[in-house]
Image 1 (cartoon, rainbow, N blue to C red):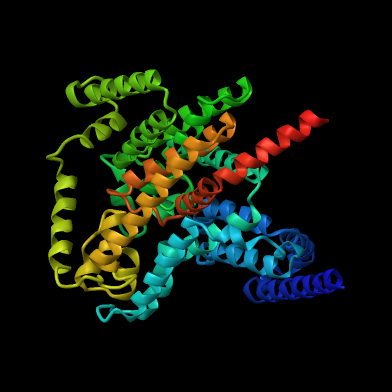
Image 2: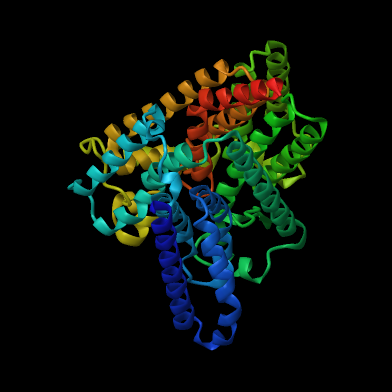
Length: 480
């Protein structure tokens, strides 16, 4: 009887959602009403697909986090950025009405979930920060800062907790990263199309993405900085998989992907992205306990540093010249960033809880223009956290990040199955690289990087369960 009732509820909700979407289509595209008969079956089928299992909505969250911002450039003011929120909430709705709701909720009693809950509560408390200029800004800023983390982690822990789900997660990230890389190559060799050119002509986009006549590749990401570090993140994951005990086909494909991703990282002109592969691969080499390989890796990194710092070879290539500026302590851009951080630090001396969520960066410019935090670029994730949540919030946030990283490392080193250990080490190495790079770029809460990291954290904390699944599967196979 419960199954019948659940099915009825699913049908009612699916029909209601389809009716709502049809109404929106008629309202928004009344000139295209003739297309509705073709669109409705697709929307209906897609709705029933999502209601099949919460993990499907989670997959769509990951996919939309990659492509939503890029699509906005072609469709105007349609709020596709909210698709991430929509699919995360859809996953919860599906879970409530799906038979899989009868789940072992003890999975949520884990350190990473407690971290997400504590950080979410702290950010909710920021609603009452007397320094906040705009309460409306909180509702926009909290999404990337805490809400996505608070929603994505439990959904992954409960409904995407199998080894098959981990494999699918890595494949989706890899495939979408390849598409992003190919789109970036299109921009580099053919130039931006009309929609991308229009985007470059808005605000400060051209001044930050066309330097000395050279385009910084941004693909279908929000900007070149996010693309450079994000594609480097995928490069680290692919590189670790390529070094793992997998089939030759998997290793070759992963190695080619890693080289492609790192090449696009260079084309993005994002100097801070350099730290992603450096820190990521060092963490992997240390955690793998292959000290000979670690020594080789260190020698390669020292050689690369020497090439950039002490030679002028290939200086006629713009991308190489720009990477060299990342190692220059007297670089003008670096000096401006350091000066801005001093301004923010001095302003916050008597504000231990910061200026409130949404008071700096893009949301600050939109909701509280003219204020010091809005007018002073934060140029980094941790500076943003300090500006909006204060020293108390920064220490709490960094403590959470360190806890997740160290516990993730410990769990990885205990895994017996080598293939599983390499997959999780790939996620851990990617996380370490992004955490380090976020010092100079606001990466952690941006999409798709944030969604990838939150799901990665969940898989790291499920390491023992995943390892147990592999062992049980092997034992069952041997008994047969």
